Length: 365
Image 1: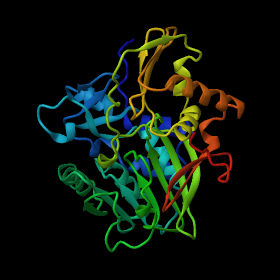
Image 2: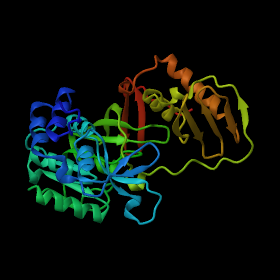
Image 3: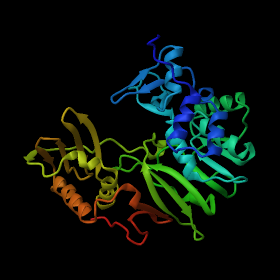
Image 4: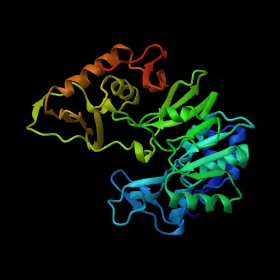
């Protein structure tokens, strides 16, 4: 009997998505008709925790493409000799299935995608709605050209445009559904005006404190949009929405005992709450043998770093870690709600996070 592990296949991937309840019968037919491999270029990378690793050989390429993993398709915005940071990818199929499910499309609806990428999501929408009802915009002309070629070879001809997805599509008129396949720091109000009242917007958001969250918004008659967060979602940011590096931290550190395991800061429900209470505070993290280490900074030079089982070190003015701990006790006092209990309202004046009810806005401290 052979002990070799069977190579993954695309039908098996679609079956796994269906088994997880991520595909309706109609979407399963769509996914089966659109093999992912048609939209992934030959040169790709696997995203590791600390770097992107080149994928060598056909077998390794197929194994990655037919798995529920993201496939990195561009480094450093396409520049040569960069640090090797992923800047474009073909998203995890399970995440694509989740987002398309939340989009709640019906026959005859016009859909707009922000971030064509490899063209895979545009192809799925074409298969579901028909070419003429699908519009997709991509900022990077090289990526856009590759997507156009891949879509054409697969037999799809949606309306494609090279341009800034943050701005409305000139002459397009209102669409029924809008999906962003790049992370946004905020939902541009100009885009909401591209969606008819009653239309749905699905987008991943990535704020300074958030680890990435998916939101489903319904556009109201007055042009505002309201809707719930729907779990985590890690996407590469829209280029104009990239968050800068951590603020510079001057001065000598001050040590104190940690009253809170920093791993708790990574809970998405708390991240949404703390991000609304402490605007402008940035957080990054990495795993450690004992748990995690986090770094938080604020524009005024206040900062703190903490690792599981170790002391907290604070820098600059104020007591930033105490503010984070206070936000945690507040979060506990309201029942430690999951991310799905939070929602977002977007108006022409900005966006607000709320808890359980759109009228219960979480105000900054």
